[in-house]
Image 1 (cartoon, helix red, strand yellow):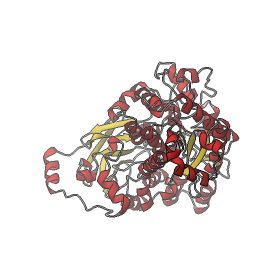
Image 2 (cartoon, one colour):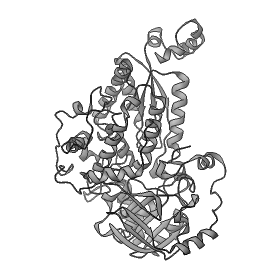
Image 3 (cartoon, helix red, strand yellow):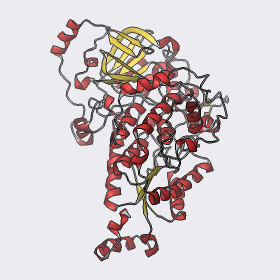
Image 4 (spheres, rainbow, N blue to C red):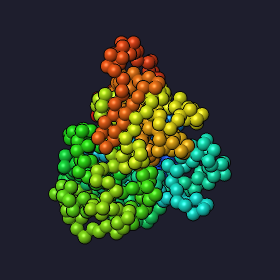
Length: 553
């Protein structure tokens, strides 16, 4: 056992003395020691109940003959961090989580790991750690929040809450209406109830094969989530005994399956950052060009919020991620020979699975669209690519050309939107918000929600080298690479320049003559870094571009 390094032989007597100090018995020390990495805290609604999940995991490990040992991982709530300097600290925690988990797991020589994340950066951070450490591991999340319900009976969610603020500024919703959303949009513990980033990644943890069926969709308040956690604790012991490691599961074929499921579900654009980063740790390369090839062959089967009016609890009732995968196998779009943490192949996991609601999960011969939910656009404005959630774009905005309205920060853009300085047809450009320029690549949920809430979602596009929340909808194009701080063309855009967007053909162009751009580049000077001390300054020096997954180099 890996843990023999801390417990076997006379030479390890000092180590054992400290295990005794923990209150462990000889019997417990002799068993495989399983690290239970839990991101429980009292500030993130998605994590406020993870202590209960951890207790269930520990019970499962003990029932199956292991010794569970709990240690923490940090978490940031993107919704609470949104709209201020706190959002600079969101994406960067992904790497802190991976690094700290690596440190704890290797320092203490655990035989296996159970990862308990739930929100946007914890899931990819812990999957990155699992691939890097490569001891037997399994993921079990805390599950999605229930949908909210307004006083008039309409169901709602966090993305509606953000758009309500825009409606208030537009004069179409009063303060009592905002209060209705405020009190009812987020009614329970769990990751926010739409197909936002957290739920996208929890679903893709299943699709990669690192989580048990139901991980992505069983609602957080349901007892089935506790049972799932117990089964995950028991299952990690099978993985330890059989010597099955994350890199045996997280293969190139598994990541292609995950990208395919991503397109079918209509996941968050943030998956285009996280899947490459996880794959990098597993020794697999994912590039943005490959995403378009997969999207071209993968129909979009789900329109969960923000793309539609259904929620994660509906997807769970319809059969969850396995039911989506079952539909995809009908056209041979998945490699079903891959291994999973169940101990079975994907083909075996899919035996007997049914689509229980063809309106929630469209049959593959009746999709929402013949192509996937995400598109990667390229052109002179984004030579290395940019990303849009195509499934959440209004039909009239799939092809758009308009004048650039240029802002060098999220705050400047928000002020202009709320001041009603943005007109139908405009293309809002927010730059110097990328991985280096932000630093930290903030989510732009506030400006995108303001645009939609003020009734401009079908007439205004937004382009940024920052990123978006999974709750964003509309013609919102992010991850522009190269970013402005790296000298990308987005840094040279001026007020009134024409920008052409063609999502069906995956193109984006700044319609300015080359000689004019050359003259602008000759005068361009990169602004001083926005942050010069602390972790963010170190992050800015090390981080790669968005098209590479914003990994640390």
